[in-house]
Length: 139
Image (cartoon, rainbow, N blue to C red; front, side, top):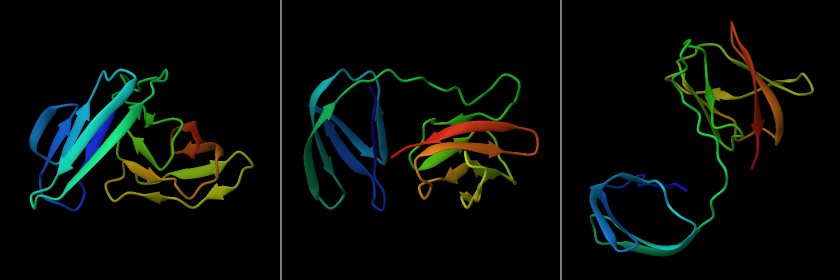
């Protein structure tokens, strides 16, 4: 499994994960985590601390390489909950539901993320000038 911790709206933090301390960070990615319970303590620069016990349950995941050999657009993750990441910058995209209805979604300023959090769960198509691909929206 993978654990990702990111500090938003604060200065750098210290993270204690299962007894190991990571200092002066804004984010931490811990890979190859086995199933089980882990303790996490996060402290900001003012000394405010949050302690938590988390349970990691591993599932079979497919890792998507965002650098396709043929420079084709790759989307990730799929299925997606909130943000769909694009492997290259796009200017014009269209999201179409399985019923054929065009959906209102926000493309990020840098053109490589789509906020799909307002979509209902289901199958959708992402259409660009040259490509059509499908993705699944879940909660």
